[in-house]
Image 1: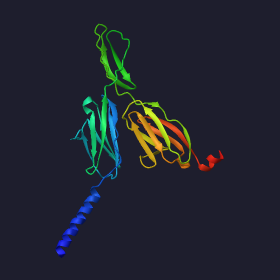
Image 2: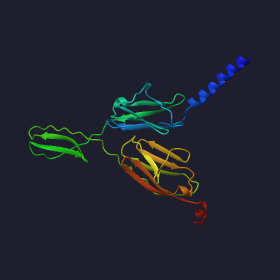
Image 3: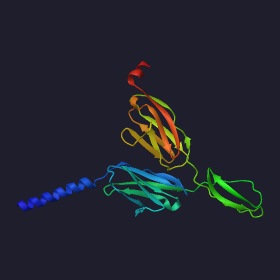
Image 4: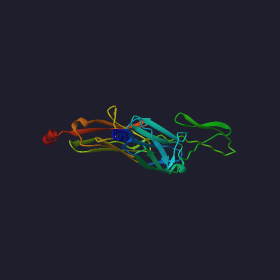
Length: 249
């Protein structure tokens, strides 16, 4: 009887330990993204343990890290960056933790055409530049009209910037802006501190529209909020009026 009891006890203990170490949750799920051909998109999520390496799948097929797919791990954040987008990259992507999954849809649109024009003299070398990067050097013959242009990735800009807001204590505040290219990851900051998605801050990204919601605002939430996208940024001042000040006003 004593041996049986010990064996059962050991089995229960091992099952309890296995459940403790193997149960992982998503603190922030994947969201659908839209990208353009030859561009890139980033699928991001946040998990409950920073020691977990998830499996990434596309339409059920396991992905491996290569020139096309880049896996990123930083703390509890996990990301999949898809480079050099093509129509074949569209589909459903899954981040699998073993005990839970998060899924998102990737849509790929055709790249918008950009017209380039210029004036040339016969038999000269010409360099086309985007900022400081030389796209392609061409030998132009006035009798031979062959033009070959390579356009580098168009920089991301803010089409709609953040606006200053003032609210009373206890209300929610939503800051909204829009970027010129869908699916590009951004950062939200208060002063110099990066904000994380959670109970206090809700971060959303729908195509090219970005939102930061501050829940149950208090005077301490006042300050300068910044949305950063690569080298571009937009700022807004938030002022939260305390209940006493609001009554006096």
